[in-house]
Length: 95
Image 1: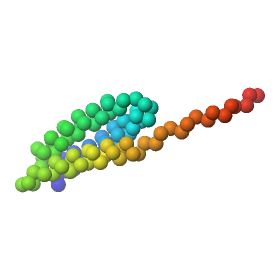
Image 2 (image 1 turned 180 degrees about the horizontal axis):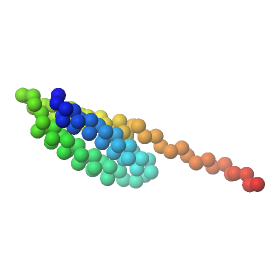
Image 3 (image 1 turned 135 degrees about the horizontal axis):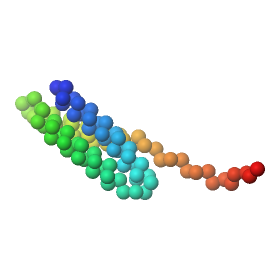
Image 4 (image 1 turned 135 degrees about the vertical axis):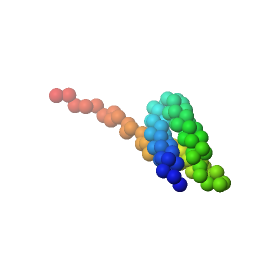
């Protein structure tokens, strides 16, 4: 595995963590998480394409590691986010 190829894998993993967390936060806010999903898809598509070009092996299958890191990073980012706690509904004492 070459250094540029390893950087592709790390880039999509970090992108997945970031955009997965943003998508989960929007989902918890009952908003459509389309923007983070599409942004991560664009980054992943470019990195998978670059990984396919940089693949030095005769079988040319190392780009699958980039795709796997992309999906794993995104799902890890989604699972990492916890929803905000519910606000306290008890009345506050006035002074």
